[in-house]
View 1 (cartoon, rainbow, N blue to C red):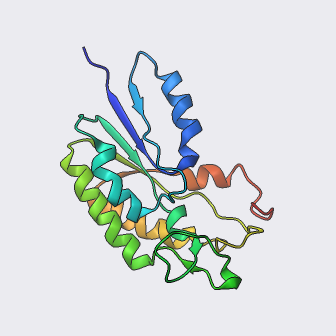
View 2: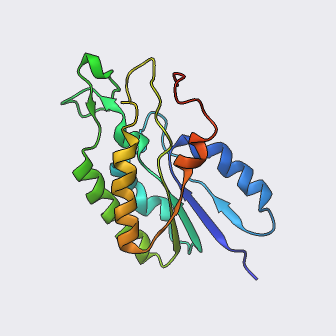
Length: 174
């Protein structure tokens, strides 16, 4: 009998946990974590662009997905190539709240068509950063947007925000 198949979609922060999960579930489930190209920022927009390739033509029993940090990062405005830029130097947020919501709706539509159980991993806390490419606390608004979209579609939420917030000192720079 074939093992259940799990697909984890997210940015590079998932590499280690996905690897650990793959080892832990060896012989019980197949865990797949497709990586993104070097230099690419995983956001809801890039997730949409890459979704068909990352889904492949296999059947997935469970798909865990996340995007948010790449949407919240500030970048050089009016340039097609992605370059991070500090807020005080004129960096703009990569994805507006309205576009983020539209992107999540499109991602969910495509994931539901795969016929898999879907779980959303919300965005972890953003602390002050010495590089100022993130605005502290900006993930809260985007997590609220995602929670509304997930509730509308009956998708379970893996509350990574609360888990990580309990582990880190929010007053220390990232």
